[in-house]
Image 1 (cartoon, rainbow, N blue to C red):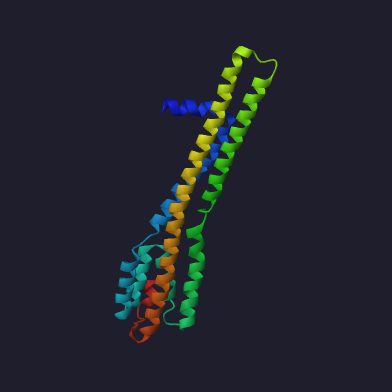
Image 2: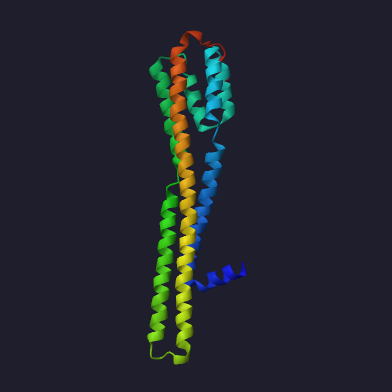
Length: 219
């Protein structure tokens, strides 16, 4: 740990923007992971439950279970079930409207991680270049004590390489977070698309079984 802190100090000013991008990226990864994984439900179990309730005609129970699930998928399905006594087009429209509210929340802010990875890498590169410029400029200066030139050159190269290493490290963290969260986002969106279509088809095919009693109270 002491060696890492020493390398950080040797990295010069370039470490500060890299640290800023890294802190933002980690905060974003934590916030998005909490939301996305907290919004996940088992799609197959959820659909099996919805199918059982709809085939039994108990839409009120299905609505209550959607409300208890408290996930984007459940809220979209619930919006459609609340319109089950209306024409098919209105059921579809209700689910589409709910999806327009929920889907942006799922994909929000995750793309910024790719930007933060590039910023960290470019900040490291800038620190590398300025470190080398300072190093070779000092060595080439006539006012520099010849006995100190080797030390100044070594310090400048150390600053440049540490900026490169830390910039790449921060970029890797941001990119790995982006890859994982983007995959989870895509999975949630696919589950929503599949489940909403299946529930809609179930409602359309089993309208004659639907019991509308107490549906309003289930809301």
